[in-house]
Image 1: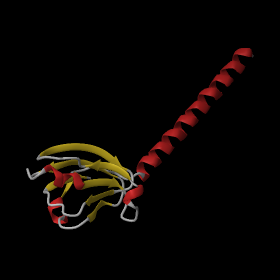
Image 2 (image 1 turned 60 degrees about the vertical axis):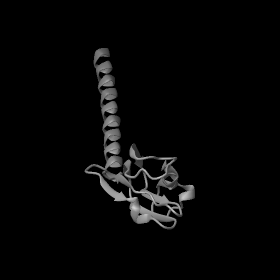
Image 3 (image 1 turned 180 degrees about the vertical axis):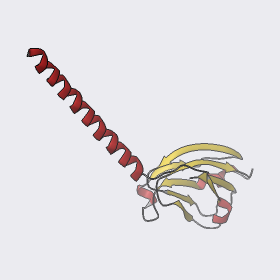
Image 4 (image 1 turned 90 degrees about the horizontal axis):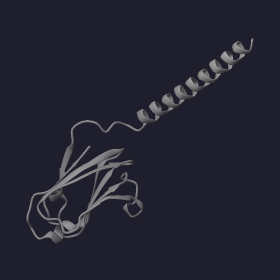
Amino acid sequence: MRTSLNTNILAGIVGLALLVMGAFFAFNQAQMASAGSIEGDYATTTTSAMASATATVQLREQAGALGSIIVGSSSPATVYSQISIYDATSTMATSSSKVLFRGNSMTAGSYIIDAAAAYGLKVEVGPGYNGNATITWR
């Protein structure tokens, strides 16, 4: 009789543990599905189209990833210090958004960023920007 009671208690504990693990797995899967997918090929945009005045361009309106910045010009480095990339939607102010990248005396070359964005990707260049850089993102 005592062995039967211990077996029932053990079976109940195992069953409860499996139920909790199943609920946790289901919750995690639902969260991952709602987060959106950022898989696939990288898209690109070129900053030369943003020249002449302070410009802000929204690259993505949902979770994504900033891949890299490829500076294709060996112009003076100061022109590249004006690039900022934020984790923000088009309605979010950049002043209160997370900075994913801010150029600082960039010279020609590739800069791997590989940063996740929870809200979107917004690029801002300052007045007088005349650089030529390519931004990869997905």
